[in-house]
Length: 539
Image (cartoon, rainbow, N blue to C red; front, side, top):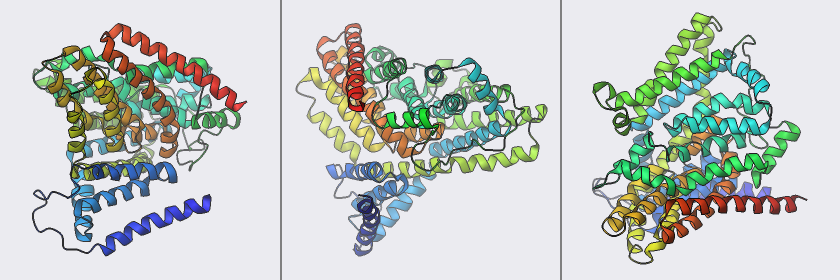
């Protein structure tokens, strides 16, 4: 089997390279803006991300898998023309996404977070917090519940959530021998799922902006009780911690962590820093104060970009904020304050502080590379008209079986977000369609369907290896990315399956309280059944 997989990994890139070399037809002379590929808005437009995802799960190697998906997208766009493929992948893909101001802001924030984590480690703050937590959090369940609680509290933005929760809770979970895969799952499951039900967040602002002709913020509030995937994911996390159950690949990771102290199980232990040269005299405040500074600065940075200091209200400034620029501004000020505090406290020399900045950059290189490839793959998919293809399918099926349309919207949202790796793009495609279908017929079903769209987008984003939030969660938990995806997927699928049934029930009942109670009960029963079945399998 290993020899076969080695051959697959060798032959697939070689085959694609040959396809590029032999497709030397003349590329269309028209400008790229006017060029429409023959595969535009067809099923083929979804194939590049599908190829990348399948290869990543099979080969356990994410970089080449994403790159192959990008090349396939370029081939489809150019009609298998070498020059056209090369130009589109480079100019329309990699260079385009790296020159996008929003993307650059996220990369700047990543680098700053990496530098701050390196500083907190070098100053001994992370180790001190781990020692403190070991005297207050004395169980694996307590460490996991604390991680969930912190993830729920940091609801402003999913990127900020992933990296901050990871930095704070990693020493705690390491002390309790919780695998990095489980930590990454807890981070990921309290990032987008929490943001999508938090009225004051960058996600609420994005959703409200896609609802035309309606009060978007009011609709968002009314849709929260129907957002089954987000709510059931929270229920599932807490219930599994209390029931002390794991299943699927995660069970192996947790077993190794408990019995052998191996937090990684498989993959390169890139993030194993137990033997790092740290300050043994560090104190808890050397971690807490920088994190608090970062949180306050990032909140101020986000509302600054939304016009808060120009007279806008707090909620309005959040609705209009530029999360990318706000996080970059906040991160920069947080880093400067951290440097000043450490200089005043003299816990680390100035030379060592400066050395931590490139060290933090290097620690974030894997996440930056994966993000760049994921953004490029999305650009390839967009250029092939995947959004138009999916929108056409939804509109074509909206005329019949209205009661089960929320469940259908949920599945379509899952698939589109999984293939594209973006929740916000899925909102932009599906929410206007849902509003146009139900706006003048059934307002309650419109709210349920909008919520189904949001839940499906978050679910697909949660499952997808090419999702930026998933990549951030791997970075925050300092876990091998493929390990994070493969261990998280069974949990996300269970929550998605229960959510799908819940949307069928909601479509007929159309009562928020009744439907939510049934959904929660169904989730708990499902977990009990899975626990019993898994126990019998392991016996």
